[in-house]
Image (cartoon, rainbow over all chains, first blue to last red; front, top):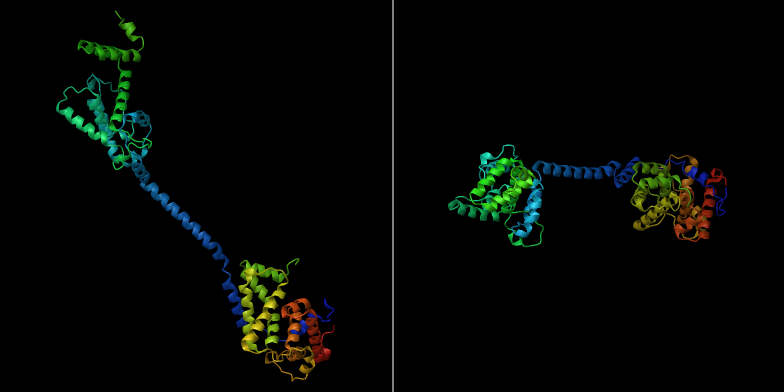
Length: 275
Length: 189
């Protein structure tokens, strides 16, 4: 057989002749080399085990955090909003705040839920019995009237007592009026979230997220009056108006007449035509 | 290089992390590489060291391995380099070192040395091993790289740093000397 460079050497024949000898590496040498080769290459199982264990650890951490979050509730979020949201007492922001009253405030409810139930209950009694700006005694209020503040958010709870003395007529308002005024001042300072450390930022342009007790109470009483007027019988209503007239409160009587006409259109003209 | 030879594929698999591929690769090449080193180094203990060093370099360079040539070409180049490193460290070259290709005739007059490791080999193999021992180192290297390693004459020239004609001449002289020693037992070309 000729070589590529015309060197007449038969490789295979010479190799076969060389291989006749029993010269070969020892088994110990073989074992050492094979072991070194295996050490140099990590086992395949370790190759997938490492990233898999990392992924499992990450998943476990996420699950634990999620579980703790669900167990504790969103308190952390509440605290965040407490710090970030300033209280608003200025009148121009009152309209915006009243609009927000219709929106639920779940974070506050969740934090003060135990106290909120008791406050809400006493609030309902408070409005029904004492503080509503109505000329009629509380007993005359039809029982069918739904609790007016039952749908109000938690922010209303602390502010209601501050609003009522301000808007309701105070028949005997000497010492109670002073106390009410004092309470009003206190309540007006109380922000719903109770965060006072950011009072310096009240005038900032931060979006309004809280309202004072005055704002809340005014809106609540308005809703209460509307609901009561809507269900009051016109005869009874008209009798009250006559009483107002008799007492010389013509302005209030006129206002009530307008409300009666708005609530029962045509009833006045039909039953009490103008003379 | 076209299609990869089986050894190159095994080496790539080993580089990719398949330890079993190395077992196959080692099994296919261990005997030939051992003989190559044994014929060049001579001493069995030194052969073992050089043999392990050679495979250690193969293992260490697995990620840099590029199958630009046959795997055995790459492997025997490493082995030859390991042998030269051994010679440098030990401060001596092969037992019958001569740089002159014309010393083949002089080498033939040296007394035959029977390596104990091949005492049990058959007669032809034993005589071949003895004849290789008496060859000048350059001729022995050229012959072993050509026969055991499968390198071409050009590759032998590149590996040994000699010219192509010199490498070809060394190989021719080696074969002639071995045929002369073996007589009728020499492979027919």
